[in-house]
Length: 150
Length: 219
Image (cartoon, rainbow over all chains, first blue to last red):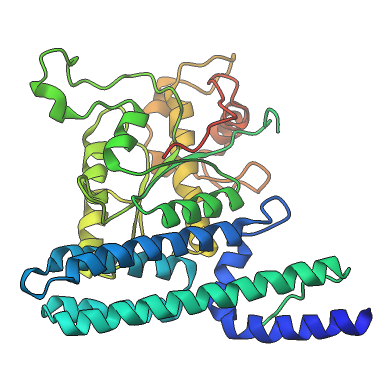
């Protein structure tokens, strides 16, 4: 049982290291009183992503009638929330996305939209794996390892 | 959950983003503040009890003077800068222009680092400007601003207890002269020391104002 836990913890640590910088601040806010905080916030974030991507997709749909203002507003919101939760890769795409918007480059915007969609879904999957690992560790009687990287 | 014996500071957080509201709420709670969140500047004003003066063309609206008694006492307002409708800057101006609420410290948050924006806000009376994402460490800057207001408020009120302290001379003193010091710490050498000691008794408990312990988050 101990080796199983140890293995899981190692796996957890590997995952955590790769996402660590992104979610340090978020995790600081979670405690025994609010054990679901991180899960709730990222869930809200993913909902946000999904909604905004849909809206922007509609705005970019017809080449002859693109509402760049709408797109810009969506990118701004996405950049903000991804920055708040620590979703660095999503945020970085938003930076390029905004540039495409500023010069009204529809093709560029579409590419960025696709990338943002990819990044947030990847993140969602990774986080789901992480949360699942956490659950398995707890159920196996282990503690969630703390990771300290300076 | 029950009565807190020492007064807790209550912060009003304003942000149109749901994710950011959740974040700032948690950050503030983690820093031991009571929090109410709203999603717009106009809702913030409504919560404070300050009518939106845009209602002045409504014949049935009361005069634009603010409700002088606050339902809930707010010790600090923290607001996002970029919001549709009323921006954080607009909200800041409205608060500072209002006789009833201008003493409430206001902090602005923004995801964009625009120096002109920052100085504009500070000039208009914002106490701090936080760059998003806001961190727990940033919130330690809030307490001094809230303490200053509470102390000033206490010295403005008529004495409920038989305290020799609340003489007219104190009311005329600038807030900056009174040192803000947590009660358990040493008070620095000041000629004001004797007045400070007596003042401590007044601010240490807060029986005079109604306490609301179950403020729910309004969005």
